Image (cartoon, rainbow, N blue to C red):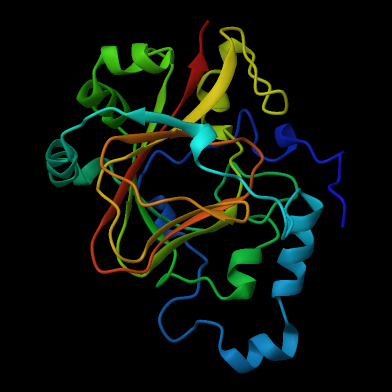
Length: 267
């Protein structure tokens, strides 16, 4: 199936969408199946819900042939103190956004969330839980301060408008097949006239970088298109290519900790 050229990013995440003020909203109002409610094998085989998600993914650009090698997207290794981020997590439980891979209030249009595709194929509260910092309280500012302004200068990302997301995945948890919409950054920086389809704003190009906080360990995986990216070290930085499907999972026994930086790249 060829990609649907009429599928627009700006139709997926509302620029003025409602963001809950309570970080516990996502767990309290989750519609994901809980223990004992998850999809079983026989129901899956009877209904084959995977076919709907595969068709949607192909319509929006995924296929089984394209590769996305890591090297062209590798920025380098900028040493960080991972212990500071571990301590940040311990000290900032109140600003943690715990969530599952399902629709949130600001998702609009036709996407895997509004179509409830993750739930249909068997994702549930036990296998797609993410602990996330950067949206609530002063966590975004604190995370930027942990890196320091010189860090942002080195990657030429505007410090003041940068959006941080510290992402913690426990063993057994997965961030399923998806591509990045940049909706959160667009909502917060509407004054910069961001266009999620051209990925440009008044400052320059909109970029997303992935900073690895903890070293790679057994079971930690990052897949871009049909390419598995290599083992990483703490401090490694990659640019995440836009509109490229990817996933990340922790099938090991140690914490998988990374951080995304979304922002405007200046010349």
